[in-house]
Image: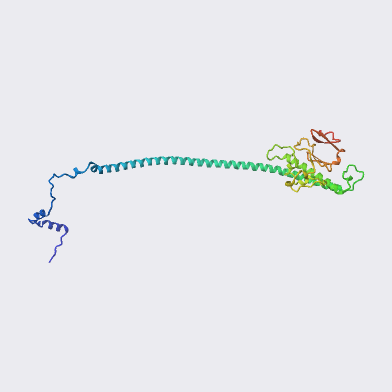
Length: 323
């Protein structure tokens, strides 16, 4: 037996051709009898919309309108805030740009300041280099002077070993019986020469522009940087005074020599600068030293304007005045 297979459309057509079932005649009556209606009160029916108050009827609409209005207000407030924030953001961006410009200008200014400081440092180094060159020149001059003093000292020592002539009037050491006195006098002359040289170095060196150019120092303590040690301020023959070991321990009691030209000028080199009260040696403002044995024989000392002036007894005819 062959079975015919139908698709969905054919099955739907067959179902549509089937006869419709008829309802029983008693079905309507049963449905009506099963429905229970409420009993009427005798008054006319009132609709539900008439019993509600006005507010309750319009409350949903008013609430919805209020919600819409609040949303609009919130949106307006937020929009205003957003606009304000945008303005603040724009002002902040402008301020940031100005700040960046200021940073760039500050960086350029710092570079200029650094360059200026470097230039000032170079100028200071150049000035210090010039001062060092001057100091080197002065030290070389001092070294040459020290060599000359050493040579003179050796000559004086060699001369002191020569037997003195009893009738010699020009030799100061010939009249001394103690050989150690000769060495003390020589050392005293060297001390005065070192003091005179230090005073001239002090007068020619003015690193801080104090206006002391070509002006001699006011006292011995002012030359503490130029004098190597305060021991040179005590004559070896002065037994009453003890030399100071350092400038921190220095006092007027540690000085044997007289300082006769404080704050003087180098314009007159024959003004007495120092004098030894023990030997009578005198140091002039030009740094030279004259032995005390020549006082009254080869030179005299005159007073002018409160200054003691070295005056030769028989000055050469072509020399200028010693005053």
